[in-house]
Image (tube, rainbow, N blue to C red):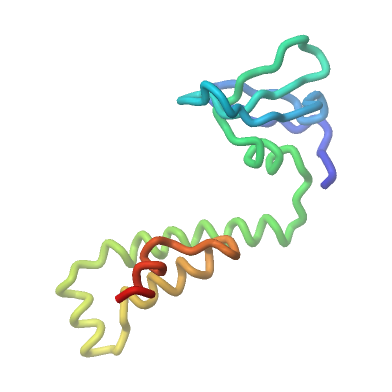
Amino acid sequence: MEIKAGRMVYLGYGKYWRSDAIVGLRPIEEERGPGRRTEVFTATLDAPIVASRSERAILREMAVASDEQFRMQEARAVLGDLVDALDDIPDVLRRVLVTEARFDVPAWIRHVRSLTRPEGTETSDEQNELFD
């Protein structure tokens, strides 16, 4: 992972820091709560900054991402919006779509969610289907 110099990284709750000045990240294990997720160590301060974002989210913003990675993130966001829109379709219209166009809205929602979920993770719905 290459850190992009001079990039402003959002730490949460209005806090920003330059990516090349961040020298370490440590997740807060004890006394973790709202606004207390990660300690951010910098080259210029003696004490760490408490950030409200996870270390992974901060690292993601610090790193240089390729055009392909940006396109993939955008595609995930679009698919998420699509799932939200499909989820909002009323039951009556869902039945019409199934009978008239053979378009199964719940099946498409499950399929798109499975594509956008990180590998190796399962939802509780999938686990519950195993026991039905």
